Length: 359
Image (cartoon, rainbow, N blue to C red; front, side, top):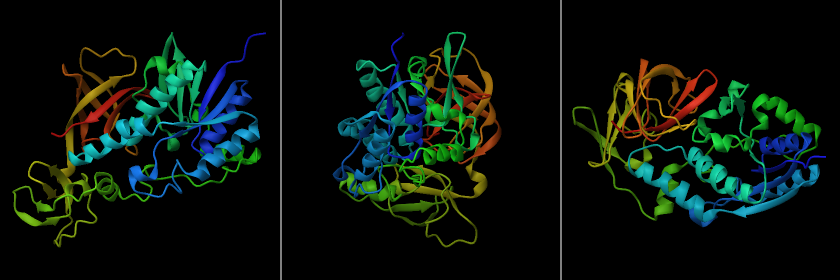
């Protein structure tokens, strides 16, 4: 009789990872659940109650593991999370960008630090509650969108490699959220009707600027709102508080709606303009990651999305010699934001992605 395969389940204390653990045990895997402790409250200046590192969440994760009869552990990765996620997050805002820390957390924590720990402990696969799919075709492993496109999270997973995909499982990729809750309810999990978190885990109140000020222990200098001709329109409260496409909270009396169209960090200016000024066809992408590891040698056609909730759009991609890419959309796209990721798709397959640069 062959030995059971082993699965290490990353559990946040929510319904998705709870059901992921249950599904893997149902498939006959020898499973262990674990929660990654990523930060202490003094790192973010917030009470941890209600965040993914709260005592309540770890208790809920442990309760689910007890219910399905698997072991559970907590692993401390506070230092790694500070260096790989929080510090780059803060630096990105200081550079006039709008980062996506979930992508870095997946890349450096779940599918690097935890992945390596799991492999060292003899686990065959790392499992998360992401809504995405992995398929092997012709000896290659591909990342695909979830069957339920409304919950698809493939966008935040584009930095995975084929080797990582070969030792990863996303058991929720075939399910809808309602189906996941029904499974949790049928098993009597305490997480079955738990509310989903909509904010970044270490910014539970959604106040990114406030978190950055607390983290750095300083305020950021006020500066000028200007129009595209350089005319001063008012005073902003610190450049870290603004992002491309923002309209609300500007406090500028005007006869027409104004939007943030650019952040000029060297001059500490926030440039405002019309909605039409937010549209562009060409994007420069840096740090491009190709999932197969094989960089294309010439331009090609595909679909691309420029933010998590963006509908992917047809474009032409030209790889560049510096490890980036030039993406030219068929139609202008609104509010392409430096710091966010541009992710490429061939149908359901994720080809890779990179970071949108200032231009």
